[in-house]
Every structure is written in structure tokens, then in C-alpha cells.
Image 1 (cartoon, rainbow, N blue to C red):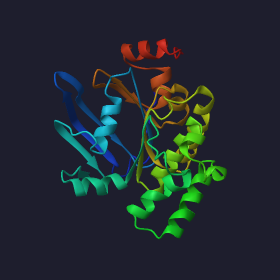
Image 2 (image 1 turned 180 degrees about the horizontal axis):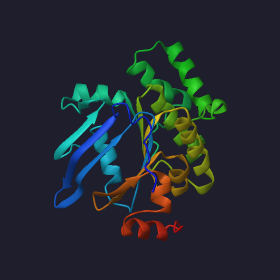
Image 3 (image 1 turned 90 degrees about the vertical axis):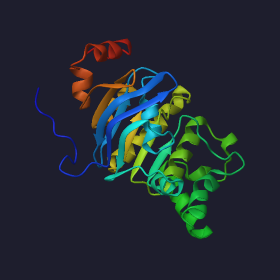
Length: 256
């Protein structure tokens, strides 16, 4: 197989995981994971449910603390102090399976709230940026709608706009389409694809293999808290080197 050069491989990686381990009681969620993410890459984490993908994502911005190993963001280990962690999280946008929107606030208010409370922007400036971001995700006509009056796909797009409002250096997506009706999955994936084309660094935990195949620059396969293999999508989906990867993909209909 022809050697594959990763995107921006000549620059320092944005995120580096070194022998990361995490246990919940007697259950090992992460068992010595080491990998890195370069600037501008879309890295998709795939594998069976419970294999450690979401845990790694939550450890990335210290929503979960690791037991050993190191997570480095922009060259520095994740800090320990809460105040310092909050500063790091401002540079990492995170989109969850559930939308986590404020039900009593409109779409516009949900996007603007971080700009006024965290960034301390004046209300007018925050509103203008929130409107621009809602337009960016295709919701210019939904600014006054409350979450209860939005579809699941629309709510998730509001959540993406809210994360983008903080001008993050990297976006973390934890199965962002898993709670959506099939007809609304595409509208969220399209927004994510557009972000990728703009050069946003993204780590995406997903079961959407078509998205991983078409949009990712790098695919990482997990199994029981370990990294099975990693590589460009054409390798992982067309010529995986590990039998367990072939078995996992064949059960999803990817048995090229």
C-alpha cells in the first residue's frame, strides 16, 4: 500500500494522547491509548458501543479525569485547576448526543449566552454574532424559536452554532446524530462537512460510516478501550489490516 501523509503532518499536533488509561471501578474504559490529531484534520473514532470512544472524547476536555498517561492540547498537558480547565474548554467546542439547550431560551439566546457571560461581549455584538452563526448552520429563520419548537436536527444545529460562538480551536462531536430521526441526520452531517471543508480541526465519535469514509482525513478504530488500528479512510474501509476491524465493518455492511 502506498504510504499516506497525514494533513499538516509537518506542524505540531493540536492534540496528543500518550498511553491514556481510565477505569470505572473494575471496568477498563481506556487501556493505553496513544494517538495524535493534527491541525485541520477530521479524525473519526469508530468501533463497537462501549469501546472507549466517547470516554476518550470526554477526557479530551477534562469532563473525565484520566488515571494515567497524558493528554496534551496545543503542546501543554491538560491543567488540573478548575479555572485553567475552563479556559481550555473555551478553545474546545463540544457537541453531545443530547442537545443540552436551555429550554426557556430562544435559539438566538442559546447561542448568544456564552458570548455575553464568558466572552463579556456587549449584548448587541453577541446578538449579531449569534445571528450570523445561526445563518451559517441554516437556521436564519429560527432565531426566535424555542427548543420545543425545533426538530431534533435543528436543535443539534443550534448546539453546533453555540459551540462555534466561542471560536474554538477544535470541535469535539460525541455521536451528534445518534438521537436524531433519520430524516434530520443529513442536515447535521452537512453542517459538519462544511466545517471540515473550512479547515476546522474535528474529532468525531460516530456510527455514521459514510460520513467517516467521505469526510474524515484519519479514522481510528477502537475495541475494548484499545486502539485496534488507524489510518486514512480508504485503508480502514477498503483494506483494514486487523481481522476485528474487518468483522466490525462487515456487520455494518462495509465489506468491500
